[in-house]
Length: 294
Ligand code: CAA
Image 1 (cartoon, rainbow, N blue to C red):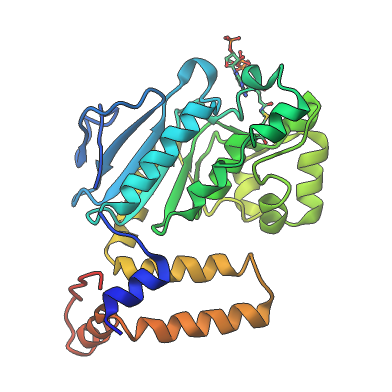
Image 2: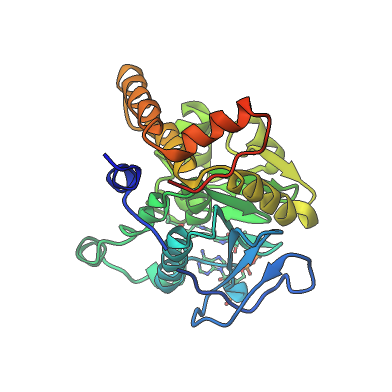
Protein backbone atom coordinates (compact mmCIF):
# COMPACT_ATOMS: atom_id res chain seq x y z
CA UNK A 1 0.00 0.00 0.00
CA UNK A 2 1.30 3.51 -0.83
CA UNK A 3 2.64 5.36 2.21
CA UNK A 4 0.17 8.24 1.78
CA UNK A 5 -2.69 5.75 1.79
CA UNK A 6 -1.28 4.16 4.94
CA UNK A 7 -1.04 7.60 6.54
CA UNK A 8 -4.62 8.45 5.61
CA UNK A 9 -5.78 5.14 7.00
CA UNK A 10 -3.91 5.65 10.26
CA UNK A 11 -4.96 9.20 10.97
CA UNK A 12 -6.62 10.68 7.93
CA UNK A 13 -5.92 14.39 7.42
CA UNK A 14 -3.78 17.11 5.62
CA UNK A 15 -3.37 21.28 4.86
CA UNK A 16 -4.30 25.45 5.61
CA UNK A 17 -4.04 28.26 8.34
CA UNK A 18 -5.41 31.55 9.62
CA UNK A 19 -3.28 33.92 11.63
CA UNK A 20 -3.88 37.03 13.64
CA UNK A 21 -2.67 40.15 15.52
CA UNK A 22 0.39 39.19 17.54
CA UNK A 23 1.14 39.78 21.20
CA UNK A 24 4.63 38.62 20.32
CA UNK A 25 5.24 41.02 17.46
CA UNK A 26 8.19 42.55 19.31
CA UNK A 27 9.83 39.15 19.59
CA UNK A 28 11.88 37.36 16.96
CA UNK A 29 10.30 34.59 14.93
CA UNK A 30 6.62 35.35 15.52
CA UNK A 31 4.23 36.23 12.73
CA UNK A 32 0.55 36.98 12.67
CA UNK A 33 -2.20 38.19 10.39
CA UNK A 34 -5.79 39.28 11.00
CA UNK A 35 -8.50 36.68 11.59
CA UNK A 36 -12.11 36.76 12.73
CA UNK A 37 -11.56 35.32 16.17
CA UNK A 38 -13.02 37.23 19.11
CA UNK A 39 -11.65 35.32 22.10
CA UNK A 40 -8.34 33.94 20.88
CA UNK A 41 -5.30 35.02 18.91
CA UNK A 42 -3.35 32.75 16.63
CA UNK A 43 0.15 33.07 15.26
CA UNK A 44 2.99 31.07 13.87
CA UNK A 45 6.15 30.99 15.94
CA UNK A 46 9.71 29.69 15.76
CA UNK A 47 12.62 30.24 13.44
CA UNK A 48 10.89 28.21 10.73
CA UNK A 49 7.40 29.42 11.64
CA UNK A 50 6.44 25.83 12.27
CA UNK A 51 4.80 26.14 15.70
CA UNK A 52 1.16 27.23 15.85
CA UNK A 53 0.37 29.33 18.93
CA UNK A 54 -3.20 29.79 20.17
CA UNK A 55 -3.55 32.43 22.89
CA UNK A 56 -6.77 32.58 24.91
CA UNK A 57 -7.72 36.22 25.01
CA UNK A 58 -10.73 36.99 27.17
CA UNK A 59 -8.90 38.97 29.86
CA UNK A 60 -11.88 40.52 31.64
CA UNK A 61 -13.19 37.07 32.54
CA UNK A 62 -9.76 35.52 33.19
CA UNK A 63 -10.20 33.49 29.99
CA UNK A 64 -13.36 31.81 31.29
CA UNK A 65 -14.24 29.23 28.67
CA UNK A 66 -17.51 30.32 27.11
CA UNK A 67 -18.92 28.25 24.24
CA UNK A 68 -17.67 30.62 21.55
CA UNK A 69 -14.14 30.63 22.95
CA UNK A 70 -14.06 26.83 22.88
CA UNK A 71 -15.44 26.81 19.33
CA UNK A 72 -12.67 29.18 18.29
CA UNK A 73 -10.00 27.05 19.96
CA UNK A 74 -11.37 23.97 18.21
CA UNK A 75 -11.35 25.79 14.87
CA UNK A 76 -7.78 27.04 15.34
CA UNK A 77 -6.52 23.62 16.42
CA UNK A 78 -8.16 22.04 13.41
CA UNK A 79 -6.62 24.60 11.04
CA UNK A 80 -3.11 24.26 12.45
CA UNK A 81 -3.53 20.49 12.45
CA UNK A 82 -4.26 20.60 8.71
CA UNK A 83 -1.46 23.07 7.94
CA UNK A 84 1.48 21.09 6.60
CA UNK A 85 3.92 23.85 7.64
CA UNK A 86 3.05 23.33 11.33
CA UNK A 87 4.74 20.61 13.37
CA UNK A 88 3.35 21.32 16.84
CA UNK A 89 0.80 23.58 18.55
CA UNK A 90 0.72 25.57 21.77
CA UNK A 91 -2.30 26.68 23.76
CA UNK A 92 -1.53 29.46 26.22
CA UNK A 93 -3.27 32.24 28.15
CA UNK A 94 -2.18 35.37 29.96
CA UNK A 95 0.27 35.78 32.80
CA UNK A 96 -2.64 35.96 35.27
CA UNK A 97 -4.77 33.15 33.87
CA UNK A 98 -4.44 30.27 31.49
CA UNK A 99 -8.20 29.87 32.03
CA UNK A 100 -10.36 30.20 35.17
CA UNK A 101 -12.73 27.45 34.07
CA UNK A 102 -16.03 27.11 32.29
CA UNK A 103 -18.08 30.28 32.22
CA UNK A 104 -19.96 30.28 35.54
CA UNK A 105 -22.10 33.23 34.49
CA UNK A 106 -23.29 31.35 31.41
CA UNK A 107 -23.98 28.22 33.47
CA UNK A 108 -25.69 29.88 36.44
CA UNK A 109 -29.27 29.55 35.22
CA UNK A 110 -28.96 26.37 33.17
CA UNK A 111 -31.37 23.56 34.04
CA UNK A 112 -30.66 19.84 34.08
CA UNK A 113 -32.66 19.31 30.90
CA UNK A 114 -30.82 22.14 29.16
CA UNK A 115 -27.45 20.59 30.00
CA UNK A 116 -28.63 17.20 28.68
CA UNK A 117 -30.41 18.47 25.58
CA UNK A 118 -27.68 21.01 24.83
CA UNK A 119 -24.99 18.36 25.46
CA UNK A 120 -23.07 20.83 27.59
CA UNK A 121 -19.26 20.54 27.29
CA UNK A 122 -19.58 17.59 24.93
CA UNK A 123 -17.56 19.05 22.10
CA UNK A 124 -14.58 20.08 24.23
CA UNK A 125 -12.73 16.77 24.06
CA UNK A 126 -12.38 16.93 20.29
CA UNK A 127 -9.53 19.39 20.94
CA UNK A 128 -7.46 16.39 21.97
CA UNK A 129 -8.27 14.62 18.68
CA UNK A 130 -5.60 16.66 16.89
CA UNK A 131 -3.02 14.43 15.25
CA UNK A 132 -0.20 16.92 15.93
CA UNK A 133 1.16 17.44 19.44
CA UNK A 134 -0.49 20.10 21.61
CA UNK A 135 1.54 21.83 24.31
CA UNK A 136 -0.23 23.73 27.10
CA UNK A 137 1.87 26.68 28.32
CA UNK A 138 0.25 27.60 31.63
CA UNK A 139 0.84 30.79 33.58
CA UNK A 140 -1.51 31.81 36.39
CA UNK A 141 -4.82 30.08 37.04
CA UNK A 142 -5.69 26.80 35.34
CA UNK A 143 -8.88 26.03 37.22
CA UNK A 144 -11.84 23.76 36.48
CA UNK A 145 -12.23 23.68 32.70
CA UNK A 146 -8.89 25.51 32.46
CA UNK A 147 -7.08 22.63 34.15
CA UNK A 148 -9.11 20.24 32.00
CA UNK A 149 -8.17 22.09 28.81
CA UNK A 150 -4.49 21.89 29.79
CA UNK A 151 -4.91 18.16 30.37
CA UNK A 152 -6.41 17.75 26.88
CA UNK A 153 -2.99 18.79 25.61
CA UNK A 154 -0.15 16.30 25.27
CA UNK A 155 2.50 18.12 27.29
CA UNK A 156 2.05 20.78 29.98
CA UNK A 157 4.75 23.38 30.64
CA UNK A 158 4.06 25.78 33.52
CA UNK A 159 5.26 29.15 34.72
CA UNK A 160 6.32 29.33 38.38
CA UNK A 161 3.13 31.20 39.28
CA UNK A 162 0.75 28.66 37.74
CA UNK A 163 -2.04 27.32 39.94
CA UNK A 164 -3.93 24.15 39.02
CA UNK A 165 -7.24 23.15 40.56
CA UNK A 166 -10.64 21.56 40.12
CA UNK A 167 -12.71 23.92 42.28
CA UNK A 168 -16.14 22.86 40.93
CA UNK A 169 -17.08 21.37 44.33
CA UNK A 170 -16.99 24.88 45.79
CA UNK A 171 -19.72 26.02 43.40
CA UNK A 172 -21.86 22.93 43.90
CA UNK A 173 -20.91 20.82 40.91
CA UNK A 174 -18.16 18.46 39.74
CA UNK A 175 -15.61 18.63 36.91
CA UNK A 176 -17.36 17.96 33.60
CA UNK A 177 -14.62 18.09 30.97
CA UNK A 178 -12.33 15.32 32.15
CA UNK A 179 -11.19 16.51 35.58
CA UNK A 180 -12.21 13.38 37.47
CA UNK A 181 -10.85 11.11 34.72
CA UNK A 182 -7.70 12.63 33.22
CA UNK A 183 -6.45 14.05 36.51
CA UNK A 184 -6.86 10.69 38.27
CA UNK A 185 -4.96 8.89 35.53
CA UNK A 186 -2.16 11.45 35.60
CA UNK A 187 -1.58 12.13 39.32
CA UNK A 188 -3.24 9.11 40.93
CA UNK A 189 -6.36 8.61 43.02
CA UNK A 190 -5.32 10.09 46.35
CA UNK A 191 -4.05 13.40 44.98
CA UNK A 192 -6.92 13.68 42.48
CA UNK A 193 -9.50 12.94 45.18
CA UNK A 194 -7.95 15.57 47.41
CA UNK A 195 -8.10 18.20 44.67
CA UNK A 196 -11.61 17.31 43.48
CA UNK A 197 -13.13 16.95 46.97
CA UNK A 198 -11.55 20.05 48.50
CA UNK A 199 -11.34 22.36 45.51
CA UNK A 200 -7.84 23.25 46.72
CA UNK A 201 -5.30 24.46 44.18
CA UNK A 202 -1.79 23.12 43.70
CA UNK A 203 1.28 25.11 42.71
CA UNK A 204 3.39 24.63 39.58
CA UNK A 205 6.06 22.89 41.66
CA UNK A 206 3.52 20.46 43.17
CA UNK A 207 2.06 19.90 39.70
CA UNK A 208 5.52 19.05 38.37
CA UNK A 209 6.22 16.73 41.31
CA UNK A 210 2.99 14.85 40.69
CA UNK A 211 3.59 14.47 36.95
CA UNK A 212 0.83 16.82 35.78
CA UNK A 213 3.42 19.24 34.42
CA UNK A 214 6.65 18.21 32.74
CA UNK A 215 8.70 21.40 33.33
CA UNK A 216 8.44 24.71 35.21
CA UNK A 217 9.96 28.01 34.05
CA UNK A 218 10.03 31.65 35.11
CA UNK A 219 6.72 33.08 33.81
CA UNK A 220 8.36 35.37 31.24
CA UNK A 221 10.33 32.48 29.71
CA UNK A 222 7.44 30.02 29.56
CA UNK A 223 6.21 30.72 26.06
CA UNK A 224 9.69 30.83 24.53
CA UNK A 225 10.46 27.48 26.15
CA UNK A 226 7.20 26.02 24.86
CA UNK A 227 8.05 27.28 21.37
CA UNK A 228 11.51 25.66 21.65
CA UNK A 229 9.83 22.40 22.58
CA UNK A 230 7.44 22.73 19.64
CA UNK A 231 10.35 23.47 17.31
CA UNK A 232 12.24 20.43 18.54
CA UNK A 233 9.22 18.20 17.89
CA UNK A 234 8.73 19.85 14.49
CA UNK A 235 12.22 18.76 13.39
CA UNK A 236 10.90 15.19 13.23
CA UNK A 237 8.67 13.55 10.65
CA UNK A 238 5.09 14.76 11.19
CA UNK A 239 3.71 11.39 10.25
CA UNK A 240 5.90 9.55 12.76
CA UNK A 241 5.23 12.15 15.48
CA UNK A 242 1.49 11.60 15.00
CA UNK A 243 1.92 7.85 15.26
CA UNK A 244 4.02 8.20 18.42
CA UNK A 245 1.43 10.52 19.98
CA UNK A 246 -1.35 8.13 19.10
CA UNK A 247 0.51 5.21 20.61
CA UNK A 248 1.27 7.01 23.90
CA UNK A 249 -2.37 8.09 24.16
CA UNK A 250 -3.45 4.50 23.71
CA UNK A 251 -1.86 3.74 27.08
CA UNK A 252 -4.72 5.68 28.69
CA UNK A 253 -7.40 3.79 26.83
CA UNK A 254 -6.53 0.14 27.13
CA UNK A 255 -4.86 -2.72 29.00
CA UNK A 256 -1.08 -3.20 28.92
CA UNK A 257 -1.27 -6.26 26.64
CA UNK A 258 -3.62 -4.52 24.20
CA UNK A 259 -1.45 -1.41 24.32
CA UNK A 260 1.71 -3.38 23.60
CA UNK A 261 0.02 -5.07 20.65
CA UNK A 262 -1.17 -1.69 19.36
CA UNK A 263 2.30 -0.19 19.73
CA UNK A 264 3.84 -3.07 17.80
CA UNK A 265 1.39 -2.62 14.91
CA UNK A 266 2.15 1.11 14.79
CA UNK A 267 5.88 0.37 14.95
CA UNK A 268 5.54 -2.01 12.00
CA UNK A 269 3.45 0.66 10.27
CA UNK A 270 6.35 3.12 10.39
CA UNK A 271 8.14 0.78 7.98
CA UNK A 272 5.57 1.71 5.33
CA UNK A 273 6.76 5.31 5.43
CA UNK A 274 9.50 7.00 3.43
CA UNK A 275 10.51 8.93 6.57
CA UNK A 276 11.39 5.78 8.52
CA UNK A 277 13.74 4.74 5.71
CA UNK A 278 15.18 8.26 5.49
CA UNK A 279 15.72 8.48 9.27
CA UNK A 280 17.68 5.26 9.43
CA UNK A 281 19.63 5.97 6.22
CA UNK A 282 20.56 9.43 7.51
CA UNK A 283 21.85 7.91 10.75
CA UNK A 284 24.02 5.39 8.89
CA UNK A 285 25.27 8.00 6.41
CA UNK A 286 26.03 10.38 9.33
CA UNK A 287 23.92 13.25 7.99
CA UNK A 288 20.76 15.02 9.18
CA UNK A 289 17.53 13.43 7.91
CA UNK A 290 15.34 15.16 5.32
CA UNK A 291 11.82 14.15 6.22
CA UNK A 292 9.03 14.56 3.68
CA UNK A 293 6.16 13.58 5.98
CA UNK A 294 5.30 10.57 3.93
N1 CAA B 1 -16.61 32.13 34.80
C1 CAA B 1 -17.07 33.37 34.54
N2 CAA B 1 -16.43 34.47 34.98
C2 CAA B 1 -15.29 34.30 35.67
C3 CAA B 1 -14.76 33.04 35.96
C4 CAA B 1 -15.47 31.91 35.47
N3 CAA B 1 -15.04 30.66 35.64
N4 CAA B 1 -13.62 33.19 36.67
C5 CAA B 1 -13.44 34.51 36.82
N5 CAA B 1 -14.45 35.18 36.22
C6 CAA B 1 -14.65 36.63 36.15
C7 CAA B 1 -15.12 37.16 37.48
O1 CAA B 1 -16.52 36.98 37.62
C8 CAA B 1 -14.72 38.60 37.37
O2 CAA B 1 -15.63 39.28 36.54
P1 CAA B 1 -16.32 40.66 37.05
O3 CAA B 1 -15.16 41.63 37.09
O4 CAA B 1 -17.30 40.96 35.97
O5 CAA B 1 -16.89 40.40 38.39
C9 CAA B 1 -13.39 38.52 36.61
O6 CAA B 1 -13.40 37.27 35.95
C10 CAA B 1 -12.18 38.57 37.51
O7 CAA B 1 -12.33 37.55 38.50
P2 CAA B 1 -12.13 37.82 40.07
O8 CAA B 1 -12.53 39.20 40.42
O9 CAA B 1 -12.80 36.70 40.80
O10 CAA B 1 -10.53 37.71 40.14
P3 CAA B 1 -9.67 37.27 41.40
O11 CAA B 1 -8.26 37.55 41.01
O12 CAA B 1 -10.18 37.86 42.64
O13 CAA B 1 -9.87 35.68 41.53
C11 CAA B 1 -10.03 33.43 40.67
C12 CAA B 1 -9.41 34.82 40.51
C13 CAA B 1 -9.50 32.74 41.95
C14 CAA B 1 -9.61 32.60 39.46
C15 CAA B 1 -11.58 33.54 40.76
O14 CAA B 1 -12.02 34.35 39.68
C16 CAA B 1 -12.31 32.24 40.68
O15 CAA B 1 -12.38 31.52 41.66
N6 CAA B 1 -12.91 31.91 39.52
C17 CAA B 1 -13.76 30.76 39.35
C18 CAA B 1 -12.94 29.47 39.29
C19 CAA B 1 -13.85 28.28 39.15
O16 CAA B 1 -14.66 27.97 40.00
N7 CAA B 1 -13.71 27.53 38.03
C20 CAA B 1 -14.51 26.36 37.75
C21 CAA B 1 -15.67 26.72 36.86
S1 CAA B 1 -16.79 25.37 36.61
C22 CAA B 1 -16.04 24.39 35.45
O17 CAA B 1 -14.98 24.70 34.95
C23 CAA B 1 -16.78 23.12 35.09
C24 CAA B 1 -16.02 22.22 34.18
O18 CAA B 1 -15.60 21.17 34.58
C25 CAA B 1 -15.82 22.54 32.78
